[in-house]
Length: 329
Image 1 (cartoon, one colour):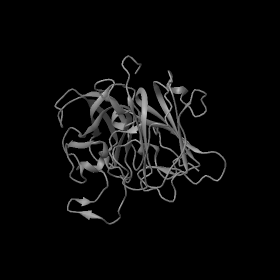
Image 2 (tube, rainbow, N blue to C red):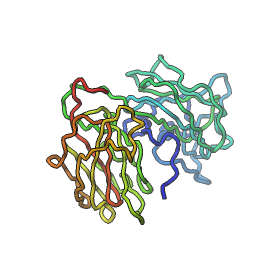
Image 3 (cartoon, rainbow, N blue to C red):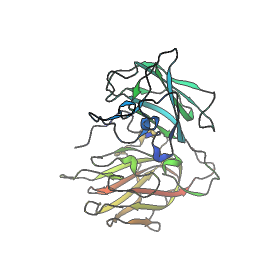
Image 4 (cartoon, rainbow, N blue to C red):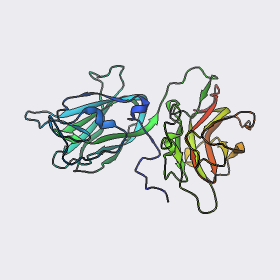
């Protein structure tokens, strides 16, 4: 059984601190620190917990405003990105949530930009103790996001769903075409009961078993899979598959298929366009596996499908290759 997925799940959460994102400014954080706004963990409520400023709340909370104006908080993204959706989460804020909010964005080298802001979400209504999902229509890439609340109050978490838009260097240089910082991302999978597909292409080795992709135990026929879009179409000549921390639950075998799709909507699991990149190969527990000689030369591809047999957990997937000059982006 797959967990129910939140809206915009096919996109990356750009506000994650592990990407280098951080909160750089708040007009006021008297009751709760601005840094909590983008903490990766879900917000919690601790009954009876107080500090010197009052009731401890897991989020960002300003004091009651007694003059004209409104409060705001600025998030500097670790990597430039296009926003496709947001969640303004007021979980556990009941009598102290802001009734309205809006979002601005800009491109700047400064931690606290002085100007250049563009409204990407007009003023919207908020309610108590709830997730508020909104689609973002603007397709520009931004470095900063400003959350405005009207007039004051507390927000538990701000989630910024989108895609990384890197500036690629010299073409022809070998890079990890799937790396999150290079714009790669998982877009669909068969199951992610224990661990998210979005963990597979983040930097570094997994810190524990929860920092990878892990499916439920399969009790019927078939196998589990993930589909990825590369940050830029290219040729793949080396693959690294890491089962770090997965010991009694790593997949027995793995295979990779790849294709070039002109239309991203065609990149579905049952497409006839998939071609074998890596034939079924055995895996071992808690180990980095490198494949090069076994790879089929397919030319330029835009998407890759990872299949595991029959189920289990994988920590990281690296797809090293080259962006070919003149190839479509």
